Length: 357
Image 1 (cartoon, helix red, strand yellow):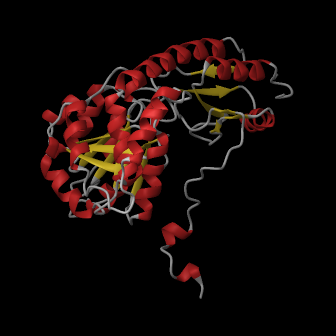
Image 2 (cartoon, rainbow, N blue to C red):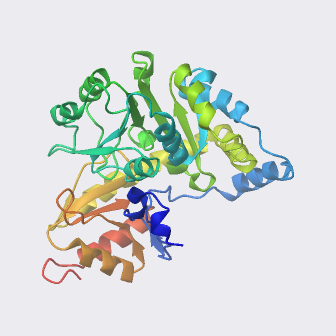
C-alpha cells in the first residue's frame, strides 16, 4: 500500500502544525497563562470532579454551558456553541461552509491553524499580506473577493503573532463586501479590554470565536463559537454528539464560578506585559511591537535562529518566527511571571549582534 495514493495531495504535501514537546524550565512559547490555581481553588475543583460519573456520556451539546456562557458573553442561548477548543470550531466552519460560495481567505501572518484546517477540509485558501503596520489591507483583500469566494474570512484580533487589534472600520468594510462569513477570533480579547462582539447585532454574517485556553484553562480545551441562530443551527448538524467531555464541562463551569480569580491573573499579565515591553525596548538590537495580547512580537537585528537556539540552551522556550518575507528574524514571546520575564531579559541582554550569544 502506498499511502501517498490514498491521502489528499494537499494534505500529503503540507507539514502540518508542529507543537513540539518542550522541557524548558521557562516556558514562554505557547501563549499560556503562567499562573496556576492556588491550592484552595484546586481542592474545590477536585471535589467537583469527584461528582462526575465517568461511566456516563457527557451532556450532549453542553446545554447548561451554553446558557451560562451566553449570559457571560451577552448573547442568547441559541447563539452560542461550545467546542473542543477553538480548533474544533474552526474545523466545523470549514466543513460546513462549502455551498455555492467556497474557499477561505486569511490575512498573513496570522494563526497558522486557519490555513491548515482549511486545507485539511478540502478548501481553497487565499492568503493576503497585512500592511506595514500589521493592519488589514482592505483593498488587497477586497480585490480577491468574488460572488462565489470566499465562504470564510478569518480575522484574529488581537492578531497572533503580531499582537495588534485590526481597525474596526477596516473589519466592517470587509464584512460588508464579502459574500460569506467573517470569523473574528478574539482568543486574546481579554488582554486588550476591547471586543467587537456588538457587531453581531449589526451584521448577520459575522461569527466570533472565544476560548478559555489563554485565561488559565488551556488543558481543558474549551472554546465557544458565537453567531446568529441560523448559523448555529447548521453547525450543530456537523458537531459530533459528545464533542465536549464531562470533565471539561465541569471545569468551564468552575471558571465562571470563580471568574474573579482569573480576572486578577489577567490584570497581572497585562502589567507584566508592559514591563516586558519596556525591557525589550532597552535592548538596542530588538524592536518590540506594541501588544494587546498576552505575548510580545519582536524583530531582531541579526539571525533569530541563533537567538532561539541560545535561549533553548538556557532553558527558555520561545516561538521562533523567522519566516521571510513576512516575518524575517522575528520571535514571539509569551508574557510570563515577573521572574520568568527577568530571566528572559537577562539572557537577551547578554547576547550581542556580532555573536548572537
